[in-house]
Length: 421
Image (cartoon, rainbow, N blue to C red):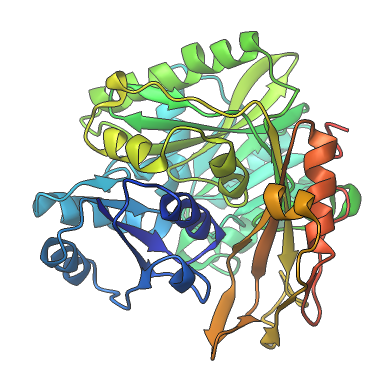
């Protein structure tokens, strides 16, 4: 089987790493990939989606897997399907669940899927009036794609009003913020859940927890994610069942009613309040760094899972997961998330411990390659992933690997998985 992965981050590297070990995969391509994905397959420098689809035809690619949200919202799936190609991901219409927070919140309300009380508006006075009815903290969201940074948790009403003003004026997020959501803050604990969907059927992966803040103890600014672990002990079978019955099933049924069947990864951001799951948001792709810790826990071949989802055959597949735990620690560049950083050579010490060699690995993200040497090129550079029989063992292995990786200005949190430990 020939497979192409669209994207260039740690998420795409992690998917590629699983496919590289998959006996069913003959040839693996990345478009565009990063400096390290070329060690797993072939990087393709084609940006135009129509040209990329033609490349898939010409090279007899059996399956394309889309990693990031932007190509999905832009309609890459529709372009590939028009050429009769198998592609894993939602249509442009279905990708609106992430592409527009207004569409998503209204969808949740229409199909009685539990979510926080909210208002969506492009009118500043309407937003201010609703803010005055709420108790701080207050959540303000930009409507469009903002690279995972379009959500402000305001500590006061004045701060919420300032956030709304900056979004609606275009100052904060440009056109993505010209429509806003203001919603009540939910007090509970947050989870990331991922359902692999084929329009009708789905497979729910083990629940994960992400760490969004830059610094230890959840201090500092929001980021794309500084680490994650899975599965979390904060979820029992009763909670999984509530998520299936109250969120995933009505979402798939609702999207069919909207003539936009949902295929691909449904990423559900959940707040658990008094053991009740409330939907914070939908994304239409794997989270990053959650993908990096979920992939190593899959025992079913990745090619089989993604292919059957893309060809509407999930009802014929039994998926199995490891009983182990995985912890991922993000290493970011010096100036992340404030500004870009100078490229820095990455040095990985020789791994002499069998424990680390066999139970930990690196998923590369913001890296380039020059003469066989990898360089950190800014943002989130890589994820050190540890796997173990307990969360503590997995975490210890991840941090042992972190100690073997060096580049100028590297920054990381030292408390990933603290909620569970």
